[in-house]
Image (cartoon, rainbow, N blue to C red):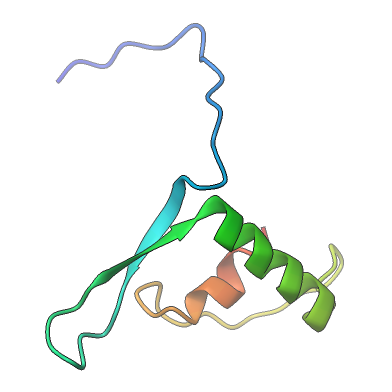
Amino acid sequence: LRYTSCTRCEDKYVSGDDNFYIIFTSGTTGVPKGVQISHDNLLSFLDWMEKDFGIKEDVNCISQPPYSFDLSVMDLYPTL
């Protein structure tokens, strides 16, 4: 594979219905399944976290479950 540097990056529009990430279920009922989380879903979640938990720029928190566990979403995205 060859790497070529990009001198101009194109802006890409992302729709609220586009997937932001996929997280997999634990598979307790059989085979794990991928759950698609859209941009709008994530933004709604972040709004809820900010309002209910009072997350602000000057708040520090340390708690990191494994990224493969859905609880990690509560630590990762709201703090960005």
